[in-house]
Image 1 (cartoon, rainbow, N blue to C red):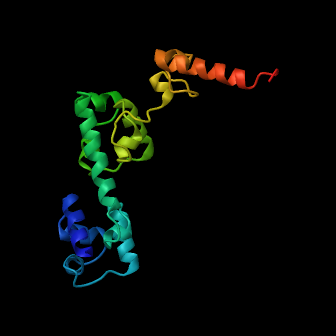
Image 2: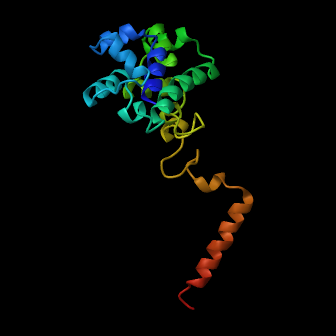
Length: 188
């Protein structure tokens, strides 16, 4: 499993075995043996590899698929929501004072997003951070209530949430109110 994961990550980052071996301070032949599962790296080497690719050692060892989800969802969703909003790469980059190359690398997964950049992108694209991270499927769920014009006490665009109820619900509330008043009258 380790060899397969190493090869996938190396290919994703468009590196040769020679280039990655140099980055990890080892010979190409040693690294190549890891990729074909003929040799196992020691803990320090495994940690160095995980740190370079920004994945967990559990992911490298095949104990979890979590990093695959995290790695794939953010770039795909970032590009999808940008295109849904009909915003060009150039427009987004200009509005955020970033380079088009940075945005393109975020969308391809070649560059990682720090939390503050993720928040800025979500706001600019009118979606939630949870959507970009793959925690929810609806892009506009959980956007800050203040940005939607809702009060924090009730998810209602008006000052009086009762005004937004259908007539049937208003009537039922009135009947319930009468019932409670009758039940707890002092003369009973």
